[in-house]
Image (cartoon, rainbow, N blue to C red; front, side, top):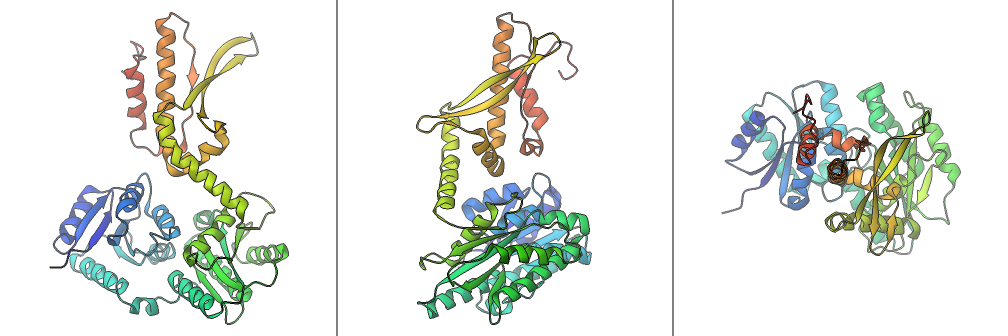
Length: 425
């Protein structure tokens, strides 16, 4: 007997989630997640087993569009088909879901037979070779789909072993803002304009494709280098499109030296180069090189060390005093976290804090800071020192935590800092 295929249901409404699980459980093994972040955690360990994802759009902590953006940018997750579920059945919502990388779209309330047929159909398509031919082209832009682009690049490299090539990938800064301000239709128009630019850049017959919502790639023959003017001109043309004022596109270049590197990884490296100049005004293109590789390895080393650092007490709390200019008296303090690594020494918060905010570890670190700060206040109170207000940092990631108020109050109560007359007791 064949093992049941696995489906991940991502839905914050418990009743809807139960309905889907009950509906699917007779034919599939079903995993559950309450939001996008929890879904990514499930995928971390089970991505190779999951055949399809049913994804709600409106959820707390991490919504469906954010989840799609993350999943479709990850080569190890992007091939898993996603069916988006939402209360609305408008064309704009359907286009939005598809433009973010969804495979299909179904509206609530759920119709059991439609759900079962859609799920079975998409899983079957994914498992057959016919799927490659059917989805050779991106539905919106007409460029090659991601998988077919990868396939064409592999074929080209195999058939032309003596020719040197490089891959160019692009990423639009704050593309979601374009959709929010001008609407989905305007965002799609911008994407189609960029697709036309890629056709001109790569020429005919060129190899170019859409990797995800706002990420594109092309393979070009290497002729000794590239010109910054090329990308300046490309940005000017993009900003000449309707509803594309002040759009910043960053371009990453990866020169193919080692053909044993998977094409997916080549594109990832080009995109990493593009992301390395995000936020830098007047900088349009960057190449993936040893320096960038070293920076990425350094970032990975920091991420790999963070849990151990917290467990071993490598994070230290320093209190920066605040003084009133009027009477030159101590008015309070701010709790600042510093990392003293046993081998690397003191690490710059400007380096590790942004990384922790991206991967979510900042929430755990902030709670450590809050707890440590409260312990200092408790110690001062026990010694009879006059009370001094101490401020702590609260990351944006903390605000998304549904229980942030309870967590803070639990820490305060743990250290006995509640005032007898407090309205929060």
